[in-house]
Image (cartoon, rainbow, N blue to C red; front, side, top):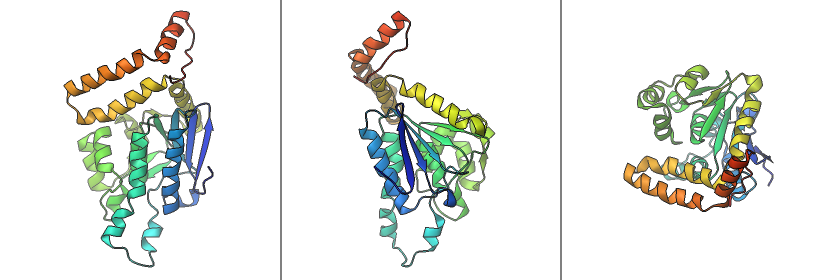
Amino acid sequence: MSFETILLEKKEGIGLLTLNRPERMNAFNEKMEAEFVQAIQEVSQDDEVRVLVVTGAGKAFCAGADVGRMSGESKPKGAEEWRRGFRNIQGIILGLQRLEKPTLAMVNGSAVGGGFDLACACDLRTGSEYARFMVAFTRIGLFPGWGGTWLYARIIGIPKAAELLFTGDFLEAKEAERLGLLNKLVPASELEKETMSLARRIANGPPIALRLAKMQLYKGLGMDLETAMQMAAACETITLTSQDHKEGVAAFQEKRPPQYKGI
């Protein structure tokens, strides 16, 4: 499928989704929102893609919603029309978390407003020294409507999340790494190489086990320990009966890399 506002490339089990509006710092317009949802659906249905990397073209990761489209409305929207307008945004954030495949944000520059939330919706994040994060909603008198209040606290903790939400201050790359928001902080010249190396390691892993692990990682946030343990037993039973488990054991015994097929 071809897109106008994003690029979707697939290679070696990795899907690379690039936000492609560099002249607008990759800010979302309605077209990009719809195309991103379509891209997630395409990746979810492609068994050859085992991990999805999200990044931005040019110097920015993503500036969130295109503010120009907010101020340029020819006809003022009512509250219900605005609410319905969030459906694609919800499809993006929930789609990334519900995608059965691991997701990785490659943060090459500023991630502000919805761009911050987009990065947080991915399972992992890598960044360069140019990566920086900001709750831009606060700067223009808005509530963070892309899920940030749920996401930030779970990744960096309530006190720091509250500080960023209340002040709208930037979170710079080194502090983001210290807080665990960035899994890896590398020089800009090495960012793509290191990110793709990590993505390949994940893509070469056992798809069934990783799919179940991701599901329980998030479902477990709403479970008590006993329920989580019961679900863990069911999930491990699935993997114990898989061909991938047999291949993993055989590869370990034969001292060779495993060749997982997701069966």
